[in-house]
Length: 200
Image 1: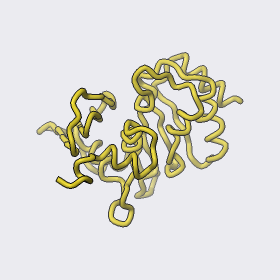
Image 2 (image 1 turned 30 degrees about the vertical axis):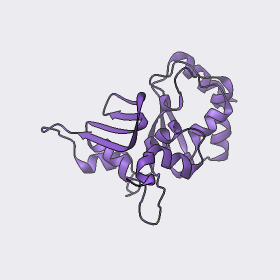
Image 3 (image 1 turned 180 degrees about the horizontal axis):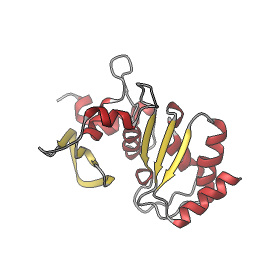
Image 4 (image 1 turned 45 degrees about the vertical axis):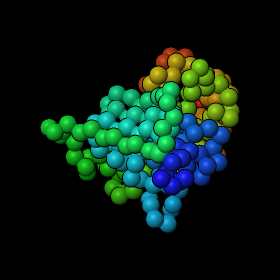
């Protein structure tokens, strides 16, 4: 096994994007449009593969990313450190999912582009962390400017701090007016903080 294969996907992305923590690589994968080899890959493969199936699962070293369609995205830290990368996919035999419908969810109207993404904000919230700082917000919004619309799914996030909300919904939005931010599944506390930032 080569060193590249042994280190696994999350560590490879961490090094390629100069991220502080391999857990951040999972958030970047979930956004889409990510590749460490742009000459040979579009960066859309893992994103769309995860949306085509019922359950999409990547395990590498101590980290485990799972996308469960219609439910949630999860970052799980495992006790054992396994080299390499394992990808598992599950699709029901009687699935009604159609490839065109999946692509259309993330395309701009009347265009054949990957223009919209859905970002599970909970993946930016590592165990025991609250989303309160500007640095956390900057990690979340990294590469948002590549999309026309970013749906921010706050499922599982109970509250956010003022600085975090201000950086995402005011500072980023002013700097990137062509990227629409759409927050969904907010608690009342999160919604109030978002509205405060937007009105600032």
